[in-house]
Image (cartoon, rainbow, N blue to C red):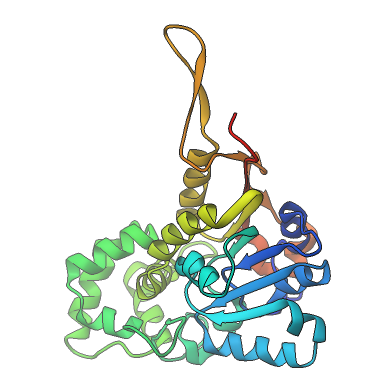
Length: 313
């Protein structure tokens, strides 16, 4: 089974939904190692790639040096996907034919213990996507109140034992600070026990990662920016890996797709947000069994897409 960090999830499905056309302009708001972007470029598209991870940007720059096509059609910039519109405008783009977000933590980030994302490898309790900015996970775990930690674990991790875990963490850190991923993961396992296939620290690590990187705030801003940057006919595609982010994307897209509402006096009117869109995916697209076998990370992936309408109904 291959679980390479360089295997883009739902690649064929995503490119098909974007409808890449030669000369079109596409924003990859979560560039990573440019897996989706390389395929867009192969089909003649121009890409503005955005990422906050310096290591990812360095690897993409190395790819550009050895690939003339990529060098010509990809401009990679540092930033957050919550700044899509501002970054696009700053680089001379007043519109786009497609926007892509591949959310969550990347496989290379998980695979490198020093980044502190994984509870399967021992490393510093960091979790910052931009390793040069902001508080790390250890700062939050060792300083936030029991109430704040419980709220975070419940809201961002959907952890049913949020209060119990938060209380135990606050008590334990009085004796020794939490500094490593395995230290925190093994502590949570001792507190709540282990049942089923999922590690008991999964939800807490998700919550900490989302808090450290303001992932939900970035997503909300990126969704707003994305629909306003797209030209009529442009497609917005988003890949999620957690139920929390998938629900946010589903709700946002549904609000722009809108619906026709019957009026008491007769006739009907459209009800929804501008700009109007039509659903490209009626329900979330998921990985095939073949892809999951090839790339286990795709198991929880969900792809949704909308298309900005050419004109009003």
